[in-house]
Image 1 (tube, helix red, strand yellow):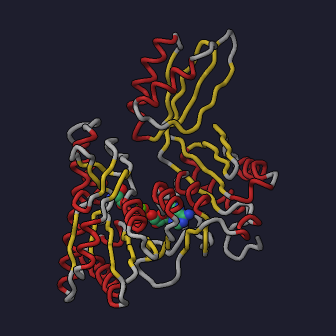
Image 2 (tube, helix red, strand yellow):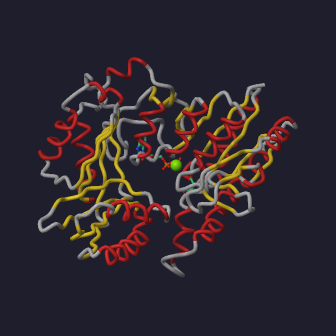
Length: 408
Ligand code: ADP
Ligand code: ASP
Ligand code: MG
């Protein structure tokens, strides 16, 4: 009997009626003769609300306790869904991540799944249950509760699909697929029938929150077919698949944006070997992920080093940078929270020139200033002011003729 994993995000389980809708989706698959695992997120904005609750006490709560707090959100949904499915006459059982053997490393708030013991899952499925699993959470080998990073329920689902060798992992959400840009910002964005793991991974890593980037990585590594689709209608969504040949003809397949970055600048850094290694070595040791880095060569043997980190890490990055600045004899540390990153992604960029110029011109035509630039084989990113992000995404989307009906 084939196994299917379905995942429903926060807005798809926001209230009891929506949870009943999810129950019907699960039962439909079960009636079609499949074994069904359903992964759910916390109801609506529950995770945000729990985080806000902790912030009413302190701005820097302990990450272990945050995991204890925010992992409760998903636990409410699993029980509600089990109750809904049972009330419709079918057998269902809910489980937390730890209960179904989801083992992670110990980095709280951004843990990675290291192992899943599928014995219990298989036993419950074989007993005829629709199995419901709390997304976003796991446990370390020391029995500490962890969470997988915001949006991490997608990763729970794809990882379960991988260990269970499921036929497909259906990601049900509030849009009906992956678009060429966030359809909430670009109304003319076009839905993609298929997208390669590599492109989806770039888009997700660059801020397209329709899929958690780690889920795409797991999907790619274990070859899990991922179907992104709507909870609220039954149209076919977007399949995330291995690279397809025809995709190479498409230069740019999407535009992504991320408002969750902040910039730190260490000003007046003495120009000598080893300074960058020290700065980024110390940030890395604290598990702070640095995204873009720029070094401006100044005068009198002094440089400015600027880098971006996630807004969540800004406080810690600033504290560390102040100490480092003092130690290396730099002049001062500045920061800017009001930045955003816009990016274009496309496998076809590998073999096409002029993509960067088109992107820069689109921004220039809207008088949007570029603060930082970074490129890879299949993406170009620019840091701009946060207030310009919607305009920038629309302008770039247009410049690459990505809208529905365009001839590219
Ligand atoms: P869920 O709660 O179901 O996990 P998310 O809010 O995490 O849903 O992700 C879905 C949202 O992702 C959409 O509402 C949409 O605004 C946003 N999004 C960003 N980029 C894209 C894109 N390229 N295609 C589709 N949706 C996108
Ligand atoms: N509830 C978690 C969050 O809001 C996980 C998820 O939705 O995937 O980030
Ligand atoms: Mg999500």
